[in-house]
Picture (tube, protein in one colour):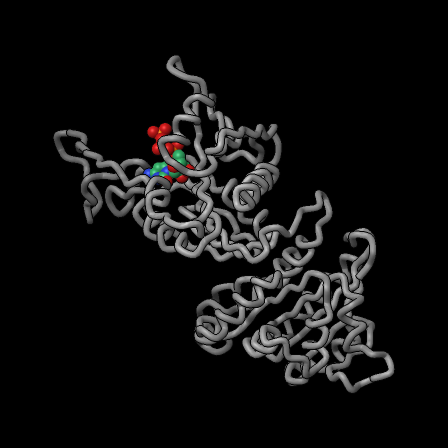
Length: 415
Ligand code: CTP
């Protein structure tokens, strides 16, 4: 490993592992993106992967020699040196077999020994059929690898080999490269302090349908939740993003679960929170829903009478998450509050009262008087803790606020 923090400007020594799946040909695009960005790439294919893309292709594209076995060129001690000198190891595609061997610590070829000797960030981009990804053995191997700080990117959902579709498709090469380089981004240096942690973030605004085409909704864009998810991935967390009606591209390396209504969001959050270390409720759930859903489109009446819509209150998800936790292993719970000051209290007074009422550990408070923050790229906030601390985050990108929230969560977990 190099002594200085490697950057895109100085060029990285990247090891591109290729294991034996049909998506091996897409590793060529990953290689191209790294080399075009000025990095040096050494390709280490498994023997099985050479059935899909041959060594000559990798040598031509990388300009470097290619070997698969530990007994090739033994004098160079490649099985140790390649991993030791890498700034980044990225495996594209990572098959179920490769991940099983990595989780077990096997060292029976050059790629597996490289994974054991690397001390730099290791990124695995899985690709396999949905059944293989969903299998308990694969899930256990992925969990073991993530707990050791290996960055296993969530596979994409889409067309697989053959006629089937589902989860297991190789993520887009540009997303793989962005996720991998994001782990090394030194500006600003982010600690890998969420490694091995499972975090759940809700984002967006829920919709309550009146009929098949009309709904009650709100102005939440989901951008803050997205920034939280991206920041958590960069700090090594396993991230589930529960997205309510968000029109943004899913962030790389994040499992996205889509929901529509507050009840959908509630059920998904209660389930996901069970084995989470941190749960952040950045979504804006609709507080009310129509008492009745009309299954066909509501029509105008000839006499021009407007329909009367009666509303009922939705459950408070954050309060339920607080009520459902028990024991020391329960997650850190974070709420968001968009407040305006009024004649009865200031923004912060309302927020302190809300923090006490909800019973969560942290509350991130935005002053939304005058339409500020909604949908914008920048924000300012105050992070209040149940312990009484208050941290002001000055106006800036939502990703900066996201990192400040994770700093506060790490502090809560350490307490
Ligand atoms: N929240 C929730 N379930 C709801 C409403 C809100 O979990 N039904 C969460 C939000 O995601 C947020 C926090 O509670 O993290 C505060 O949301 P806010 O709308 O400010 O709270 P309310 O209790 O609805 O307060 P108000 O009466 O001020 O709207």
